[in-house]
Every structure is written in C-alpha cells, then in structure tokens.
Length: 234
Image (spheres, rainbow, N blue to C red):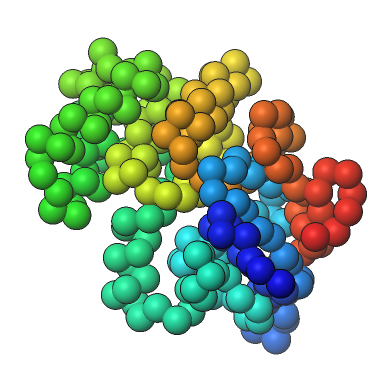
C-alpha cells in the first residue's frame, strides 16, 4: 500500500516500559499514531498517563521499549547521537509548561539564542525573532527581562524561541498549564494561529480538554492506549 507522502510523524506499535527496582511500569502499550504535515494534533490525559513520555519519544529524547518512531519514514533509532542532536536542533521545537527563560537576557535575546547556537547569521536571527514577537503581540517587550514580564508574556517568548529556527515539528507539553484560564486560552489561540500561519506541524499534550478545540485531530491517552475522542482505539 502506498504511504501518504504528507505523513511526518509515525508511531507503530510503540511500547514504553520503565523499571524501578523489581517493578515494571508500562506507560505506553502498543500505541499507533500518524501525523500529517501541517496538522495540529491534541492529546489529552490525566497527569502521569504518559503524555510527556510520548513527546519525548517523538522528539528523540528517549527510545521505545518496543515498536518504531519515525519521522519522514526514517526510524529515530537509526540516527547516531550526533545526527539525532543535529536533527532535533534543526527540525523540532519544544515548548514546555515552564518557560525556562534565561533570566539575565532580554526577551529578544532569549528568542535569538537557538538561532545563534546553530551559528546562523545574527541579522537573520534578529529579523526572524522580531517578526515572531510581532505575531505573538510581544514586540514592545523585546528589551525586557523575564522578571519584568507576566506569565503569559514569558510563555509567548518561549513559543517564539521554539519557532525561531523554523522547525518543521512543534512539540508542546502542557504549554498553558501554568497560566490562568483567560491567559491560557489566549496563549493557546496565539500558538494555534501562528502554527497555521507558518505551516508548522504541532503536537500538543495537556490534562485540560479545552486544548482540543480547533485541533485537526484529538486523542485521549489512558492506560497506555491512545483513543480518539469518539472512543476508538488507534
């Protein structure tokens, strides 16, 4: 059968088991998922159900106990450590619940940092960073340090930082989980809008089901199994 050429991420019968002493904990159990180019995929589930583990596998930060995680039909386990590190830096952007901004740098400098680490042109880094700040409504905050920004503003800086290298895939782990309801909804909308505008692929996980609105696909992760929100196993 011919594969869909727009398939970006594929997980096939993925199982992840952690061992603590003599105890084995199965976090993911035969999970399958296909994400197409440009899709926004939302995955919800209770705290501790394996959402972060799933993103770590897709981002190449961990390997499955069984099964295969592929991006553009290449298994991540086929990369050397150096190749995988370079791949992550170039093609994957991470957004976390806590922004992890560097306190001694301004908002603009924090956003530019990944660009500069990859030895890209400084003028190009400045131009792309300021463009993203404009799209996220934080242009006027460019010279402020994190301690002068609100929680929502810090998270938008973190979103811009994740996008500055123009990664193909964005992995967002509870990106609004540390924000109040109003700020969380606004931040989610800004994230979804900018991802669609720039044609990124977004996989977002949360314990809050409100993230499923406007997503192209929505799933529930429970007992290591991924189900769509109509209750069908995938």
